Amino acid sequence: AQSVTQLGSHVSVSEGALVLLRCNYSSSVPPYLFWYVQYPNQGLQLLLKYTTGATLVKGINGFEAEFKKSETSFHLTKPSAHMSDAAEYFCAVNTPQGGSEKLVFGKGTKLTVNP
Amino acid sequence: DTAVSQTPKYLVTQMGNDKSIKCEQNLGHDTMYWYKQDSKKFLKIMFSYNNKELIINETVPNRFSPKSPDKAHLNLHINSLELGDSAVYFCASSRGRQNTGELFFGEGSRLTVL
Image (cartoon, rainbow over all chains, first blue to last red; front, side, top):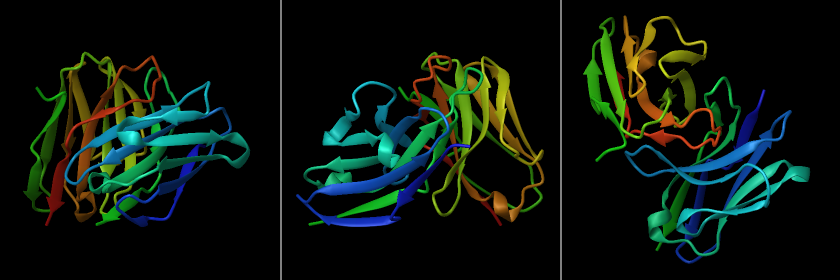
């Protein structure tokens, strides 16, 4: 079974500092990997995804993530945090099933950005 | 124009009652889902339907019954509500067979069972 582990349930950074949110996955087949963001009282929104090809993927709002097969990791980074980045971030792995996506989510990392 | 809309947004009810949550998507997607997010923010898939056909049923108690009258709608009915059912329930949709992994989520329905 595929699974995702997010290291650190809470991450706090200063505005302008580097953001690094960690995600490791377990998969018996080549994984499709995703980062979603959830702002307070809202649904989830896709930030970026890796399926095949280039291992460094860029997403919305200046975020990017690098797929490292040897480390089974897919960490999310942003060079300079903005106050508006404060949210819950979820890493996920996909197991397509019968014409349906089946996203397995990590437990989430809450990002706090301090002024 | 909201892409995936759920009603109601908030639901407070007593143990033992029956309640329903409705979901509609106007994206033309073939597949719809219900996810449950618990108090620790953990998200778990409950059901998925592809073109009105049940695809995924993740060991959810049979008190939970999804219904998809057409591919744009997926409703969730819960019988005999228990305290542990308190959570935020998210509806989502995707294109289905393209396996992009991109789900479009509604804003959630917060269920509180007293």
